[in-house]
Image 1 (cartoon, rainbow, N blue to C red):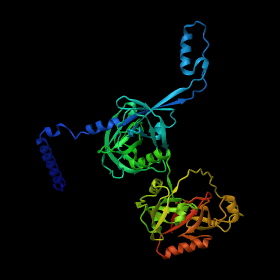
Image 2 (cartoon, one colour):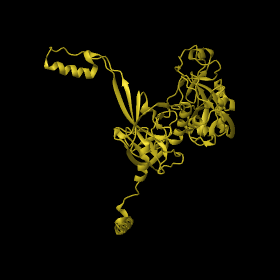
Image 3 (cartoon, rainbow, N blue to C red):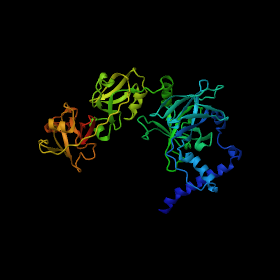
Image 4 (spheres, rainbow, N blue to C red):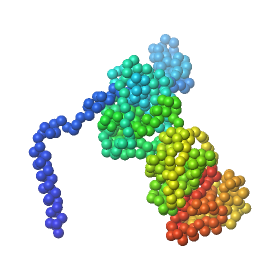
Length: 490
């Protein structure tokens, strides 16, 4: 028994020793120069990477009065000088300048166009571009900035054409590809770091269109706005954020993909703002429960839970319960992927959209609209348990429900058109627990059929059982008018 266990280990030791001997026998010259140097690439690209210093005038609080000291006292001059520096003579408030540093890169050396992060220049009263050769240029104008993608486009007037760098395709980059970051970490000036792409399409909850490249190339404070290069010297990302408990690099940095940056920069240059596409649907993830009820793989596409009236989606014939699989020929691999694709689509363009409806694939043509910023603020209301309002409550699948009456609609703020079953209680140990349902929700559909009574719901459940299904798909609506799909086991 022991020999059977140890024999393979002896073989492994012998193999390792043989490998070591083979390595020792190689000429020392083979390792003298180390791995292939990227010095020529760094040298060629560094002149196009800039340091960005900003100055912002911060209003000082009311000054502190100068302490009273005897005239002619040796402390008179000391206190006067000290308090003049802090707040002005006799306590008069004095504005102070706050400076910060970041990075950027030149994309057009003739026009003097520089790209950086929006957060690098946000609120700045003065922006100065510092070049590798010591040249300084004041920014003439911020041509545009976009907080959602965290990108800003700056304009300087060069005395001679500046060194610029081209964009490359972030889509073509793969996990494991080598990348190089150049920037201004901690204000130290042009610094080069190398690593690989650790992951793509990262969502770090920084904004609605998160699609970051993750890299282990060292990125620190001051690198923000700097370029992430591929080994061809093309910009494939703009370094934007890090995850770090210390404030320094721990090998988890994020860059905005160049494909996104190019679209944003082009619109900032042309319009001074970003004009994003709009479809007019509310979507949700195809969870495991919902996927089973629809008969599709988990995390397939984007499930349409609501449609804005007169929107591009409504005009194209999109329906609640549709699962959008492709948009403009591109796969919608996750729910969050659809908003990014729609946002980047040209406004007014007619694009094909592939969707799944009742188990069948359909192609619809939709004309992309323009996204308008809207503020929506409505408080959610929960039902007040009044005996006269709750008519014939019944329990189904761990849910206590009652038909939505006119009184309940008024009390809870539902639209007059909303019909269905109001959820008044949820069994904490029942099948509905933890399934994205809450008190005050109204079940308006089950298996894409209208629900008005408990009998309607029970009929839908029986239909699923006869078909051999184990999940029932329900459409629920809250008092704000927001709808979503919920799948419950039966």
